[in-house]
Amino acid sequence: MVDCGAAQGGDSVLPMKDWPVLPSEVDYLFLTHAHIDHIGRVPEIVGQGFKGEIITTYPTKALLGPMLRDAMAFSAMSEERIRELEKTIDDLSWGFEYQQEFDLKNGVKFTLYRAGHILGSCFIRFEGKDPGWSVIFSGDLGGKNRPILCDPDVPEPCDVLILESTYGDKIHDSKKQRTMILGTVLEGALNDGGKVFIPAFALGRTQELIYEIDRLFSDPQYSQKFPALNPKSAIPVIIDSPLGLKVTKIYSGLSEYWDMESKNLLYQGDHPIDFDHLYAVRDYKDHQRLMGMGGPAIIIAGSGMCTGGRIVEHLITGLEDQLNDVFFVGYQAHGTPGRDIMKYSNRPDGYVYLDGRKVSIKAKIHSLSGYSAHADQKGLVEWVESMPEKPGKIKLVHGEPKAQRALAEVLERKGYIL
Image (cartoon, rainbow, N blue to C red; front, side):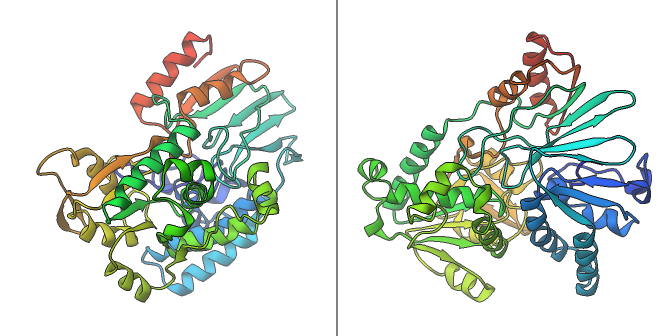
């Protein structure tokens, strides 16, 4: 089995009792990365009798525990049951290196490759001997030239490619464009004296934002373009996410998996995800104090789709102030408050329900697509085209129908079989 994720927004999931293979009959569970929509049901499958091996990369194994504990904390499980599942999952989990072939049972081999989505993300190639066959699961693919992350590896040939299609109908801004857009909007927002709220996933997006904001404040080329964003201004950048802080610490301890740009900054004494006016809000008491603090300030908090977490409290009070700004830097699934805020923000009477309260949308709303951790249509097609030979067949998954149709049309025009 590859991935075992929780539903997001209005998506539904198949009860495990209705699976064609029962949890107790699964020998191996492969995890492509540690986002909850790919690992969120791991405690459930273990609780339903899975006793096989959980196989992933070393960084994903390091991230698995904190991510699942945070998810389980929002469930009805007792602390005793959470600890029991944590230990079982840790005992069943194994970390493997990239680009090394390993043997499973019955002549099946697997290799994990860099996917460039978040730290530790991978795509998986399975190969069998009798008869000869090969399958690649893309997992979630990232784009090239992403902060901290190595580019996705070039995939080897395969009979079947199971390909994600999240942004199969979109083209993202380039890295340079997104940094310039972020700088322009941040400077304007901060000159107003308001707060900038950034709903961000604790894993991946938070660390990428810290990296980019640090560059805006410290790199001379940006200081000239954005005078308000300079080290002397000391505008506080605040991470109000306990999980985000844990993940950032894990990221810092896994520098051997960073790209060369980030490694070089570290060697030069410029830590890529730490700077002087970066502050951490660790407990709820500090969070409450932060709620009463005035601007200007940049606040990064979870959850990324505003479905829960501390960002909800910030938005309940902050959305109705026209001096404030909200930056969406990631995908907002149907049925989530984040999607509703984006949808209704252009209406004079726009509002959203947060924690059961009706909140008017007066703050300025921005969507920066270039910060998506997913490759866009161009990136997905180029990744497929980089294969030495065309795959025998492509199966599209992990995307809304519109995105899948758009990507399928492009691939079919290029001669791929779907």
